[in-house]
Image (cartoon, rainbow over all chains, first blue to last red; front, side, top):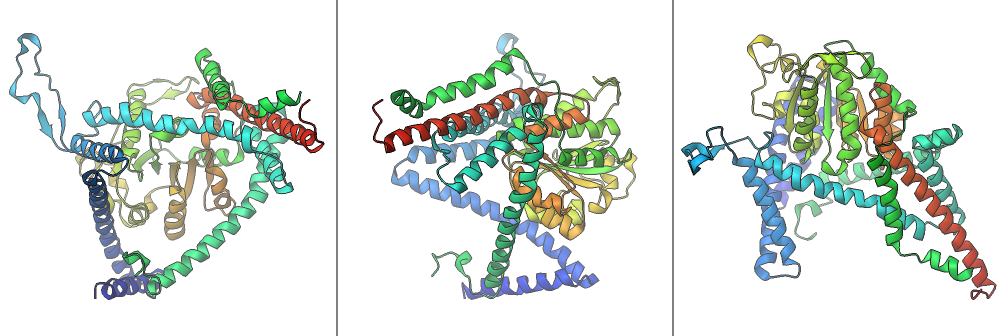
Length: 233
Length: 303
């Protein structure tokens, strides 16, 4: 029953949503609106579930003292510090008096949903920790691309040469300097993007789309059950 | 010669890092930038679409990105907002990225401070006063990309009953004088907006096409990082996207179009230098590689 009931719910909902999509009847529209409300609730609970799962996994690693347990500690503490600071953001009020160290009772004005207010501890965490860390990580990409292009991008075969030439044209064509060198470079770059690139992308997208439909049908029909968990039992 | 070329091929990568660093740093420190950009057709399409809207029209601006892509995506969001504010286009902003709220609030706050007093734009045009609630609203972040895009097609209040600060959205069609968010009195679903502009460093624009455009026929324009733009070209050709603003180059193009060169234009010189540097690395690396390989095949290698 633990597996049959979810498969049945999935099959019924899957078929119902397909029928609903092709029949724009008022009844069908009313059902659709209700289902959207359910989706919003389910997705929110899925996030809570994800949060619990992540916490449990890292707590287990910490308890067992696994290799790299320190990273689990960083993950858990970052998660909960952000969460708590976001929920219980305090502000230093105007009545805070430095002279004579006279601190009024309302020094900590605990209030909900002030996490995003300018200058709040949550925004300070965001501005001074998250922004520089993420920007640094993304910026490193330029350095590694430059190094990798020098070391590994070799015209060893015809295919590699075509790829290399296309990459060079697009790289120069996508910056104003390319236009300054010759107007043909951006034109050639656009041609590469609009013709060979798009043909390849479209082929991939059609393949992915067909794969998606096939997978969806397998799930609706109960053939594919790995989404139920349990290691494909 | 062989030894020199071989050593060149095995150069310590830190030297390459140093060259890239200097290529980025020197123009930024000197404050030198390119004086103009050359807008691509896909960027002009977005600009023209927004420019042809009437004063008071509404768009949705979905800023679906995190701090990692701020340098690339914030300039285009800033340029788009300036165009909307100057033209009187009203903006319902939201984010479908969990790290997005901080990014959006900082940017919206900056723009609202810029437009808090009447004045003159750098190009000589009049800078009107714009206010939160009247000209722009930020709804915040909600979990679930597809479901929220679908919910927006029915009623924005299904997903966002309040704005980011917890202020209740007024009922659709209610008296705008009775609320601090009068803009939302005119918005129920996609029928009330002219288009959705999604700015993202992820695949979220594809969700907007699949669920927003295909299901509800709302027009979608996209701003994306340079590494993503090739992926979105098929949607341009089919008309599923009305236009595309690709990376910092796209942002510089947009700044050029709104006649307000800013950070993207400044970033164009370092980016051009690094692009040319990488091209140079590839060419030199290949030349050295093939010369060394030829010598080794001939049994040389000690010359």
